[in-house]
Amino acid sequence: MIPRIHKQGSSTRGLLNYLYGKGTREEHVDPHLVASFDSMAPDPGRDPSATKEDLQRLLDQPLHLLDEGQRPDQHVWHCSVRAAGTDRILSDEEWGDIARRIVAATGIDPGGVDDAGCRWAAVRHADDHIHIIATLVREDGRRPDHHRSGQRAQAAARLIEADYDLHRVAPGDGTAAKRPTSAERHKAERQGRERTAREKLRETVRTASAGAVSSDEFFDRLAADGLLIRKRIAPGDLLGYKVALPDDRNKDDEPVFYAGSTLAPDLSLPRIRERWALHGEAVTEGEREPVQPALPPVTHPAFARRRAAAATWQALLIIDHGDDGMAAAQIAAAGEVLDALAKTSAAHTRAELRQAAFALERASRSHIRAVRGHDHALRQAAHDLVHSGPALGRGEDGATTAMVIDMAVFLAITAANWHARKHHSQQAAAAQQAAEHLRAAYQAAAAHPIAALRQRGQRLTPRIRQRNADLLHHALPELADRIEAEPGWPALSATLADARQAGHDPAALLAEVTRRRELDTADSISDVLVWRLRRSAHLPAAPESPPATSARDSRRAPPSNPATPPAARAANHSSRRP
Image (cartoon, rainbow, N blue to C red):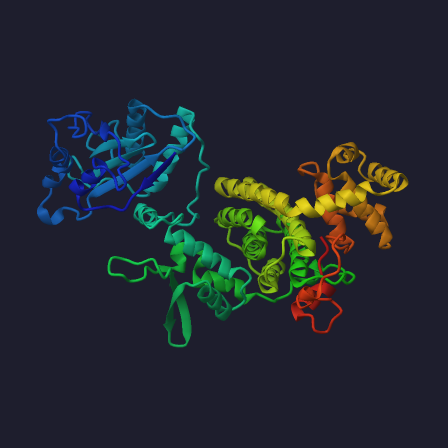
């Protein structure tokens, strides 16, 4: 149940006209009162002898207790209360009780021994919500104590949900981005937009900031995405910015601009600059890992995805063992990686990746301030993903996309568990939602490469298959039977054979990757082990693919080639093995 306190107004009659009207799209059905301050207010919806003017006069009567100069200009208080789409249809009596609890909790009409509250009325014109209108002058002429009424209404709603057995909404903490206003939603509907301008701008700005390392790069990306930009500049310094959609206009046909800070708290220019300030600074020596052997020649997008998978593993360790500020920074930077993946991955994974990035954005904001610097690996990975260009949905590009998404699922679950330990209910729920979208994206990305590896595993000789099964039972005796029963076991068997053929000790590799993180919560343990092994052993992610054709040679990035981009060479010689 979501209560929402709207902006205070100056016209009681104007709001009543809307509540008892047909709605902007004829959606208001049978408007009528379900409760009021004295249970005797006239109902112009169902009483033919009552008018909206009668109700207005009754509600505004306390204003006349004050001299004209003392009357507040913005005296109309408005709160809507909406049930979840999955909730049962509540009766008028139930909605009336809910209205009384909301006005009591917010200080509009405390009730009890205080019988001099504000006058109010609750109007229902749809099955799933009510509107409460009140006059912000009490019966004794004083102003009500409705400070922080939004938070107080939310707290009351959590109790109402429990009492009425309704959908439970995770309690908020004031760190969520501002919701679109009803006017913005109605405008989007009139224009046939799926999302409001505010929501579209928030996603575009968030994506443009992913992995950016300077104001020039950030604003260049915004311009490339077609946004109008206004910069706030003092002598010698850039102070802030505003953005607008070219076709989002006000009544004067002028673009409607939004400041970054009004889109989301972490999209203000100072907060984005915090990411740039420490970009490129190395983490402490103790966090460095041994230099790994060179990767086989891969495309730029595939290389960037391997780097992102390694950085994601590093982030998991920091969230598990770092302090709170470092963990918060990793979760925020992980959102940048998802934004970059969504922007550069193939079409069949893009929608779920965008939804995952949207959900993780909510998980990235809490009252724990991110300590930037230790998130450099993830931010560099996001930067590389953007600059590597679009990835194909097949071959090494597609397989490494599955590889990094597989690791991102674990990161989202880790973020959810971290937030749950901190009692951040909304953030934990958002991270879990991100994990679900990532699982769906993984299924789309991994379908072909895992199927190809399964076929290779099924073609292995019985002697090799038995040797791999014996190895599995020795390394993972408690999970071996479950893994062998999974559809992905032949793919894991093929990967163990590839590792042996490449000169690795499969037993040592398997022992290493199974120590790194719990496995029994995975949807497919064999899939998880396939990607960990192929990443750790630097095996091709899609070994069944033929060599790249000349059409793709321009996109190849052999690590040993002096022409390889500096970022790629640096990552190749100091990659952090997941």
